[in-house]
Image (cartoon, rainbow, N blue to C red; front, side, top):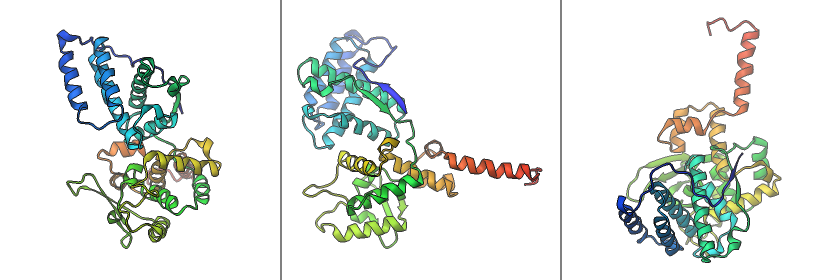
Length: 336
């Protein structure tokens, strides 16, 4: 795990400052025009912060980076069903970090964005716009490695053994056996799932039919069929909470963390995204070709698949002893 001390200092930037003479009014006007139509919580605070950074003659890249990071966070925060930053909790920031990694962001990018967001929150505290209790202590996140750990097979069994909730079991098995992202799973409708053909259709956009197809294992299919019998027929989404249109990211994450604790796995550092990495690792260990796994994971670049689903220690161990057995028997004579 990588220890990251996130404080209120801005990320280092070596570019020349951009002042009024060099076009900051044009930049700030552009950013505010992009901010204006967005229905974000605390949008006025974001605007005040950007104006403050201009007055402080901050660098162009710092202003642009802050804008992007804050908008991403406020969008995510709003999707959690929250409208006031006074309700911000540490878990919300941690969930955002996991969400960014789930989107494939590099660890250094996640660290930088987190630093910009925390700097924004410190500004609001200093302006007495939000209470200081929001950031009681200096935030110290243990950011996961670029690639989350795959779960050990025994840990997978322990996790599944404690999940008796019909909906939650269907969701976690779907993530584990298809490798789809949590955001993709929470956005599924029953029209996207073909139980008869054991397929899940994932679309990249509402205006086109591009996307990919993933397949259902026997246990995932069984759990989905069981949830299908219990579901509210009036609900279009596959996964929903009582009285809600759907399950938000933070709720799904909290449920997963709870099951990890019940299974005695809380100390292992697993996240929801570990289910996707477990899926990839297990298929590689079973001999699946990288090109096929690339399509199932939805990666445009096969190098992302190669990095994302690197071989596990177990595979390297097996390869080593298989090769060494040949060497010790004198079989490695160049004819194999």
